[in-house]
Length: 131
Length: 95
Image (cartoon, rainbow over all chains, first blue to last red; front, side, top):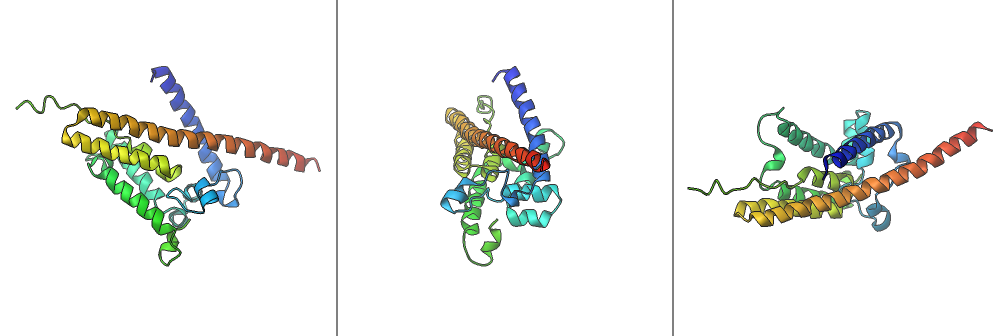
């Protein structure tokens, strides 16, 4: 990719992120308006691993950690892992990125698929994982 | 002992993009991206550098397809309902 294109892309995504954060702070996705719903849930009736992440972002921006975990339990760990990776890459944190391990992708795959299966079970305590 | 000298750096496996894709948007493209990320690591560990490079390109492609599509749909959706919302607001004000 050319440097200029990349710059435009980065600036565009930056602006978009700020707008998105403001919108997710101001409007609650729970009210079912403005934000798109997960097509997976709407058309297939299945909760995917991403379902509830929009509500979780809204909760998180209002510092309601418990609600955020309730809507999507993987969002916070995911953000933590990404942040740790970026900080290590930037040289702020010492040590090894959690994403740098050889079996990191496999672990992630198992976690995501397991999470998706469990949160669809109508069975206590797994139903707590539903968004 | 020249083995270390011919070892190219490990290609990027785009794990951050794969995670963003699975948690925020499309599980299908996210899973594809994760599988290719895993392939990057396995091929590289076995010394198949060309294969690893190919898997890296695929991991990137699937992550970008998922995230790109989602961002596009999100923008269209929010713009559409945002305009409708503003319209409703200005209508309500005139009564």
